[in-house]
Length: 141
Ligand code: CMP
Image (tube, rainbow, N blue to C red; front, side):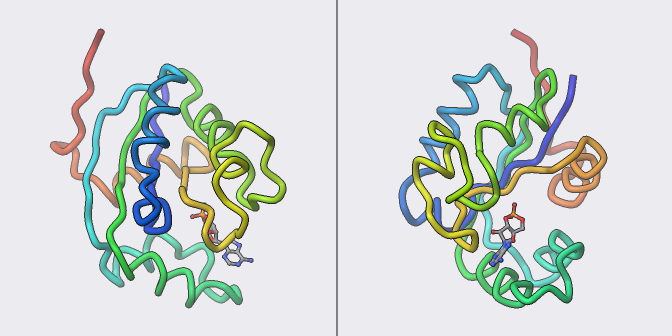
């Protein structure tokens, strides 16, 4: 069983797409085990996007992600990392496959609606960054 971090970023919140993203992940069979709605601090944004520091889009990305509230979640399931990324579609919406969230609802890479961990190792780091252990609620059917 795998876990992954999903962010419903400010553009998706502002466009009323929280339900759409959750619907698609639940329908896929993944389990929601943690969720919070928050405005992200500069410190958390910089830690989350540390790997992109120095890239041309980094400053704008941090400014954007801290500008308005987002929804952070942990999803669990078999191959959850790959399954969630497949449901989201390619980072660049114009390269995302039809039927994916980014294909169906986005056009710009800087407004690609969601973030999802890119490997089980990254997922463990990102989940620890965003959630305390006691904020995660595994449950069984
Ligand atoms: P995300 O999955 O949150 O991880 C890094 C983010 O950087 C990515 O989604 C995009 O939103 C953003 N990003 C990646 N490349 C670019 C780019 N060329 N211009 C602006 N934003 C980008």
